[in-house]
Amino acid sequence: MMKNKLPILLVALALLAVAFSCDRQLNPLPKPRGYFRIDLPEKAYVKVDTIEKYSFECPQYALITPDPYSPDEKNWVNVEMPQFKGSIHLTHKPVDGNLGEYLEDVHTMVTKHLQKANGVRDSLIFNEEHNVYGLFIEMDGKGVATPMQFYLTDSTRNFVRGALYFNFKPDNDSMQPVINFIREDIDHLIKTFEWK
Image (cartoon, rainbow, N blue to C red; front, side):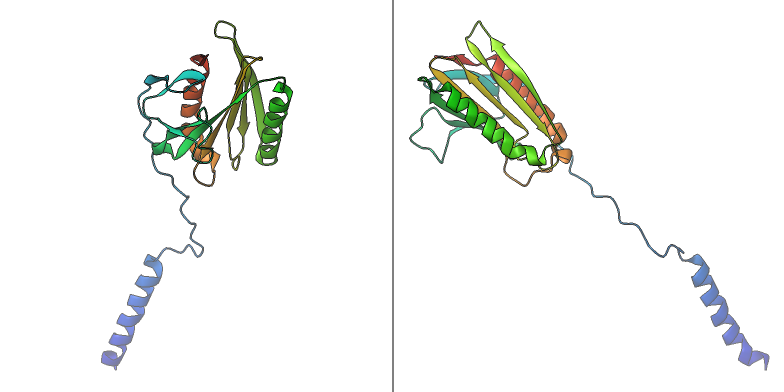
């Protein structure tokens, strides 16, 4: 009779061992989403002097390309940053009593992005030595398409608008280190900007 109970006892002990050795957590939590490490290049700048109306210094890692959507506009360029999948779009317009219209356009473009912005900061640009004046606008928020915009003008002949765009759906929370890095490059571009 004992021989018949031995296999049943062994099976019962095996089931108990399996039951107590398993993790008792019934609802496992998913792992948090991770992001790739972003390697940032060394800061070094080169002068861009090939544009007819203005010059500036841009990062060595950037490429200057003509605006593909406006091939007739020779003073419209993109400062491409392939490793970040982003670019700074620069557009130039002549001023002839229409500066107010251009400023209104900038206001309209900023207003379009305010729906997704958590906060907006702006700062005046005032470089009397090079006759460069304008406004720099930063927008915080996870889905803001252009986290930085600016305009530069000499008030009488030239107007340049710049905007940072990324070539993917923005997730500015995870992109914040890159946005901060590029902000330094935009600051440098503005400080070295000169009219011809």
